[in-house]
Amino acid sequence: MSRGRALTLFVSLCTALVTVGLVNAPPAAAANSAYVFAYFTETPNGNGADYGLHLAVSQDGLNWTPLNQNNPVVTPTAGTLGLRDPFILRKQDGTFVILATDLNGTDFGQNNQYLHVWDSTDLRNFTGYRRIRMHNLNTHTWAPTAFWDASRGQYGIVYSANNGTDVFMVNYTSDFRTVSAGQVYFSPGFPVLDGDVVVDGSTFYLYYKNLSNGLLYGARSSTGAPNSYTTYTSGLRQGSGMEAPMLVRNNAGTGWWLWGDSYSPVNNDYYAWSSSNVGGDSWTVMNQRAYTPPLNAKHGSIAGITASEYNGLVSRWGLPNWTRLKSSNFPDRYVRHADYLGRIDPYPFDPYQDQQWRMVPGLADAAGVSFESVNFPGRYLRHSNYEIRLDANDDTATFRADATFYRVAGLTDSAWSSFRSYNFPDRYLRHFDYLLRIDPISTATDRADATFRVTS
Image (cartoon, rainbow, N blue to C red; front, side, top):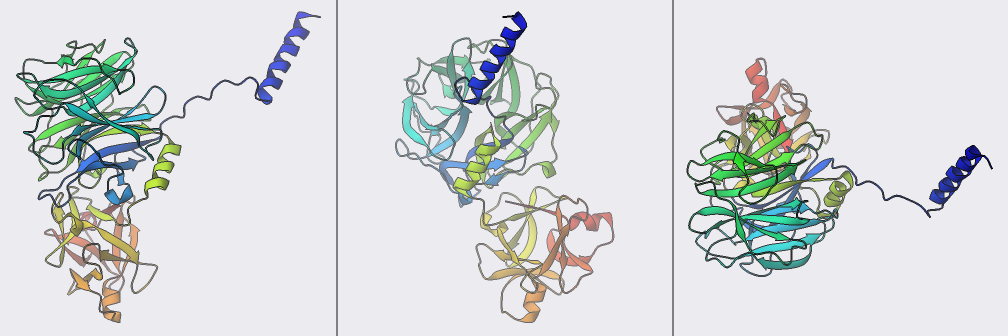
């Protein structure tokens, strides 16, 4: 038999074997095309505090939709019975592990040597709940992050503790059940808090808060070994305080985001930066129009997920049955009612439900929309003397007309929305001096005032 004919027969045989399933390479892992955000919730006066595991999803990594009506998907059943600072890691086998601080509430004087741990194949079910002891120190075990250390063939779990000063500790593990003895991971000569470790190629990045000046910094290492990091960025902060950095790689592979949690729930919950070069000191402050954190979210983590996983999470936990309206030109402010008047106020505030609306078919025309209050059901936004009020539906034709709007492309940004009055079609819902009203629109300022993002 000629060499050429032999090769042809061999290729044909291999093709046949593949066809019948006798020879088949394992499929490549699906690429991440969406994101999941794990967090707990707090609001200024505690009205929205919940110390269970919350999840939100996003397709662009910037604008987030809470799942399960922003209720927890799982809650600890041991230790303090509450969690803070949840961290999601996709393990080498493609499944997930969730780590969290064992702390229920805001009593930061508690000492606790344990972390909460769950396993999950898909974030739709959580199994193997346990607590793992990380050290024998008389101190806390806060804000875990974890990463795969290929040179060790193990995962590193890094967390905040105090051994005379605030440092990061590390324990190594293969199964998130048994861990090595804790050792100091990062102690730069000043107190630090809230580390996040991300591995990019052969470089390990550690972002953290410097407690001496309240700024966020990035450090890097070529090995990821304890005490091998060198700080390379300038200090970062937005607002009056910042902590809990989250370093996130864009699924498209074209850049990075850095999120920072506000120091206190009385400030905006999250701020963000972007960079095309995580290895450079080149973080750019992002306009708050570009991102919308999950409602009431505090100190969380973000992980990439596949389209199938995204769809599975939405199917399992459901999307919110309420919406919020974010101002285009004051993107830290949301439409809310206060004393039965419509206005825009900086988020967060309590009662946080004042900003939640059921956007229902228009009371006067189902082709339009009406806004029913979540915490005052039966009351709707309506105009009266051109001012927007929250009034009870008296089922008159006048009320139905006053409470109906047509949703159209945003007057200043077609990706957002504007709302034209049903019975005064030359007027649009807009804010003026932070109060809502309906007015004719003619200037660029008017158009910006009348443009909102419909979000969750």
